[in-house]
Amino acid sequence: MDMGTSHRHSIHNIISPFSRKEKIKPYRDGKGPRVNTATLYAVEVPEELVGPRLQKQMASAKIERQENGTDSFGTGEERYRFALKQFNSSKREHFINEKEMFINLENKEGMIKYIGWFQSFEPDDRGGLEECWNIVLELADFDFYTAIRKESPPISAKEILGFWQTMAEISGALASIHTVVVDRQQYLTYVSRCLFFASIGSILTMMN
Picture 1 (cartoon, rainbow, N blue to C red):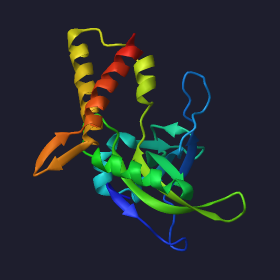
Picture 2 (cartoon, rainbow, N blue to C red; picture 1 turned 90 degrees about the horizontal axis):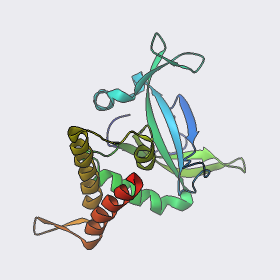
Picture 3 (tube, one colour; picture 1 turned 135 degrees about the horizontal axis):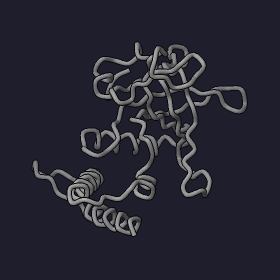
């Protein structure tokens, strides 16, 4: 498993590297789970199955797990935690769109890291196997909405400057999705300009 990899195997050849897989239920302000186009999981991969380049890039994702399943900072098994976004076969178009988006944002500051994608076949309710499409990402502590609502706001001049620099990086990354290149020159589309101002407006609204 390594950065930017993509894999497509037959059901007879694929072996999952995940030693742990837990569903993430995206709650927001106690309103219950959101309806999404994909299912979110937190997955763990043993250190020996993570490539050297990915180990270096994702050092913060490394944890130790005791045999009883609890987190450990002692002599447990070393693993790496990632986020898995799984789309069923009927959502393949959504998968393709999101994969291209994450690839476009891969080297942008302020965005979660894109690890790669793969195809899998998962057990269904009828006792058969269903084709699924998967995106592997850096596992964030919480989403942007929760961070804005729950984290302490910046107070000092240095903190405020740092906050808005980070917001500018995020807005720039989102706008880059809708940047077109003509004759080797980059141009912002109307959508990208709207995204920039809309994101700033949303931030100000949530801070009030």
